[in-house]
Image (cartoon, rainbow, N blue to C red; front, side, top):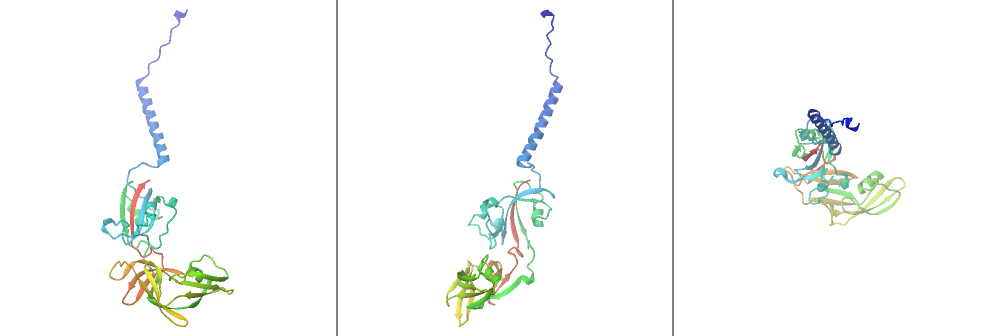
Length: 300
C-alpha cells in the first residue's frame, strides 16, 4: 500500500512572483526606513530652502561688522547668538546689552520662512540656502531709526548736589536694587562710580548723600570716567571724560557706550569733543543699528 501513495512533489517557485515579492519588500523597507529616519533625524533633503519651509539655523548677530571680521571688516560686537561657543568666548567682543544665558539655552534657531517670526531680511536670506551652507548678510537699520524723541544731548560737565531726594522708584533704578524698605542704606554703588548712602523715609522719599572727594576720578564704565573737578557747600562739579573709545566715522559716531542716569539706561552714540557734549539714545541697543549676521543653515 505504501508503494501506492504518491509523494507530493515540491512546487517550484514562480520566478515572476518571486521578483515581484522582492520588489514590494524592498519598497516597503525603503518606506519604513525613510519614515524612521525622518522621525529620528528630520528630513534628509538637500534641496534649497524655499518660502514656507520650516528650517533650523545657527547665527551670530553683531554691530559694526561681522564678529569674525568676514570680508575684511572690523570685528563687530556680538549682541545675540545661538552658539554657546561664541557666547562663552571672552575673546569675542560682546555688546553692552549682551546677556550670557545658560549653556543648554543655546540651541539652533527654528524659523518658518515667511512667517515673520524673524526679521524679514533674515528670513529672505534663507531662501535658496542648502543644509550646511553659510551666508553673511547685512541688514541696515534692522529695527528702524531712532525716534527723535529718544535722542538727547548731554554736556560733559554737570553740577550735582551732595544730598538729593529721590522717589522710591528712582532710588531703585539708580542703584540697581530690586526692592527697598524703610531704613538706612550704606555703601551703595552709584552708577558714576562713587559711594553713596541713603535714608528711606516713611513718606516714601529717599534722601541720598553722595560721598565724593574733589580731584578724584571715578570709573563709570570701561570707557567713561567721572572726575569731581570742584566742590561747594552743597554742590559739586563732575567732568566726564572718555577713554579707549573707537570712533566709527569722522562725525564722532562711536561704538555704543552704556550710560546710566536717574535710574534709566542710555547708550552714547556720538561724542563731540569740541562742543564738550555727547549724544545718547534711550531706545533698545539694537534700534538704529546696522545688523551683521552670520547664518549657517543646519537643516530642516
